[in-house]
Amino acid sequence: MKHWKNIVLPLLLVPVLVTGCIKDDFDDCDNVTIYFQYLADGDEDVLYRYMDKVDLYVFDESGHILGSGTYNQDQLSNFAAVPSFKLTPGKRYKVVAVGNAYDATQVVNLQATSFDDIYIQSPLWDGDGGNVVNTHDDNYLGQEEFQMPEGEFVVYRDTVTLYSAHIDTDIRITGLPAPSEAAAMLGVDTKADGDLPIRLYIQNSNAQTSFNNEINESEKGTIVPDLVWDADEQCYRTEDLALFRMDTNGVLDANRCQHHLVLEDANGNELVSGDIYDYLLRNQDAIDVTKQEALLPIEIHFTQTNVEIKLPQWYIEDIEPGWQ
Image (cartoon, rainbow, N blue to C red; front, side, top):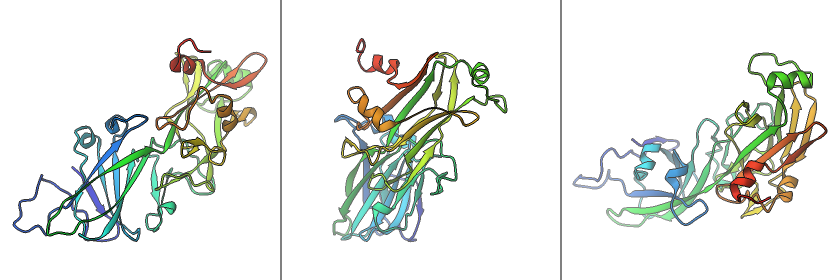
C-alpha cells in the first residue's frame, strides 16, 4: 500500500486504500493522480527497470512542503504507481519525485521555500568532512508544477518525468597480488582478517544535489568506496559505487568535476593519484558521463616498473568489440 505522512499540514494526503470513490458527496475523495516515467537515453518509458522506489513530495505555490508519499517496487512494477491524494481546487502546486532513496540518501532542508536549497545527500555527510561517506544511491529526480482546476469534483492527472542524478562508477585496481601477498609486498599490516592493504579515496566529490537536480558546487566531500578483492578477476574493485553528476545540461563541467582520485596503502602512503576530469578528457571518445545511464570505468594498473590510471580493457570490449 501507499504510505503517506504529513510534514507540515494535518489536512493533506490521505492514502487511497480502494479504487474509486463511492461517497454521495466528494468532500473526502482524492482529486489528483500523478504518474511517473523515466526515459533513460531513449524514448521508451523504462522506469520499472531502474527504480525500485519513488518518493513524492508535494509543495504549495509558495514552496512550502505539504506532505510526502512512498511507492514501492511492487507498485512500480505493476504500473500501480498512481499517487492519489486531495488538493484544493484553483491553487497551484509543485511535486518532486525522488527515485531510489535508500540508506545512502537523506533529504535535507525540506522547510526551505526554494528547490535550490532542498538537497539529497548521504546521511553520513556532516558538512565538514568529519564522517566517512562510501557511496550514494542510484538516485533520480523529477518535478512538475500545475494548477488545480476549478470544479465541484474534477480529477487532475499529470506525469512526472524523472532524470538521473547519479553516475555508476566502477574502479578496479589490477596488477597487485591477493591481500596477504600485497600486504607483504607493500610492507603494511592488516589489522584484522578481511582488511585490505590498500585504501581508495575520491576527494572533492560532489556532496549534495538539489531538488532542481543541480549539484551544489560549494559542498565537496571525500568518498571512501568499499573495496573488495575479486578472486575470479584477480583485482581489487569498488562495489555498488555511485557518484553525483558531473555535467551541466549534458556537458561535462569542470566546476562539477573536481574529483581527485587517490590510492594509498594501509599505512597512508600514496601509491597513485589523478584528476578524474583530466581522465575523462583523455578518454572522451569512449566515456560519456553525460548520459542518463552513465558509467564511469577506471582501472589503476600496476606493473613491475610503473602504475597508470587507464581505460579498462573490459569496458573497451563492452562498448565496441575489437576497438582499441
